[in-house]
Length: 200
Image (cartoon, rainbow, N blue to C red; front, side):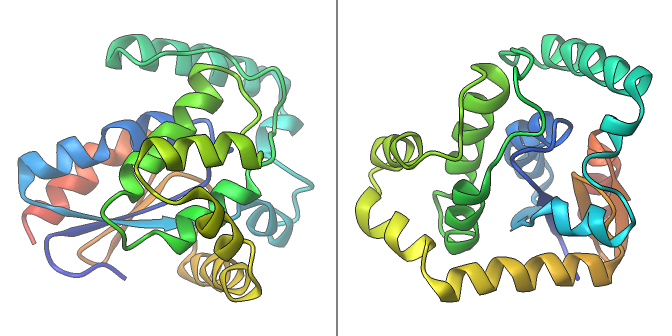
């Protein structure tokens, strides 16, 4: 769980509502003197444990249509690029593993924003070694070594363990935030979660 004046963001690169949160959380946290702890997880096993075959949006076409339009409005308000994904859900295992490996590194936030931008701002395939490598290179991080380590068994196990921890914490979707012992779900709860962390 979160410590004082810290916010945990539990997210997946395939999660549409995680996009606007990932893109602004560090700037908003800095204004409040709150540290961001990045917690990537795989939502597929979470959904499966809840009895869903995949994203709950797939079971409700009307809700999915609303979600895409809602995200278009949110991105316009935030000034974020938006291009509706031509494939949904889209695989994101490699970037998730890199983010897991790097979650305590100074560049993790930049990495996460870059991957999200390519997914939801450019409609690109993100579970791709070339794309991930290009992002890492732009950040000044050795792509070959980083990707090789991210694909190693210890990192795979770390992502599985973090996903299981998320399930045990009661996470049922992304983004989810923990601040001073409280759980907040959804992009529309980010500011409330940040304020809660700032008052801790």
